Amino acid sequence: MIKRAVVVFNLGGPDKSSSIQPFLFNLFNDAAIINLPKPFRWFFAKLISKRRTSTAKKIYAEIGGGSPLLALTRKQATALENKLNNNKNINSKVFVAMRYWHPMILSTAVSVKNFDPDEVVLLPLYPQFSTTTTGSSLKAWKIATKKIKLNKPTKAICCYPIDENLVKAQANLLKEEISRAKQNTRILFSAHGLPKKIINQGDPYQWQIEKTASAIAAKAKLKQNDWFVCYQSRVGPLEWIGPSLDEEIKRASDDNIGIIILPISFVSECSETLVELDIEYRNIATELALPYYGRVPAVGTHPDFIIGLKELVNNASESELKILSGKDKRACPPDRQCYSQGGLY
Image (cartoon, rainbow, N blue to C red; front, side, top):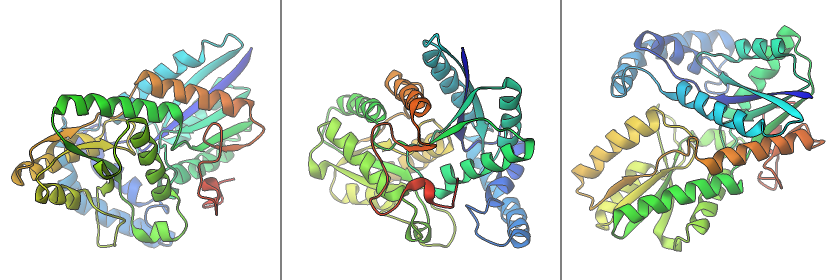
């Protein structure tokens, strides 16, 4: 029987109040996030993490003082492992690796080495590729495995923005929220934003977000002018991609129409959904007297989504490619491959 290790990657989040500052330091000390020479980046990360801790503590206090992301990711990992082990010829074990808080990528790599698999499949829980998320995680995995001398045949799934099962899960959740609204609404596909300079450097994230939104809209049979893509979570002085969710909420108010927000880049509930969408942006909508404010849940362990992840993993195992973009076809812009960004392999 073949032993297969599947590593699911996510951002990670502080599990308690005292973890918030070191979590922020790890985030801002990542060259994919702050592109400064190492000594300057270290000092900057120390400074900004200290300054932002108070604000971050208030955010996490809204959801019990810590992030639910690890617990939710472990539920996804368990659901995926159960699906994968329907195959009696392969013994699959799914490991969780977080980029900025525990379990960190190096410790997960050690666990994988101890499992001694015949093959490894890397599966970021970011449907859309960005150098700041998937790119950063895969590079960190490469460094970690080199450090501990983990040398096993490895495949990586760089992205799956138009995977049919992901799209089906999100479209079905959207339709459920539309039926609850019982009125005409505007659909806003909200993604985590990025500074424009990252996109201008060739990052395919925004292109893929738009592809995901179009696929969900088609599956849910939305009319062309009933849905829009926007971005949230802007921080810092740089110019970010837009339009922002704030702007779209204001526009909906001007048009006197309710909104339903689908968090298109988040597959798990986190501070961006539970605090930003459910509290902060909802308060803005209330102040502007929107007729309706609805929010579609993240896909989580939705059966269609888990089936999609299973198919992605199995397809990777059977493929001759080391890095795959989607299950059946390339999901990258025509002028570049997602995984070539940053020289991952």
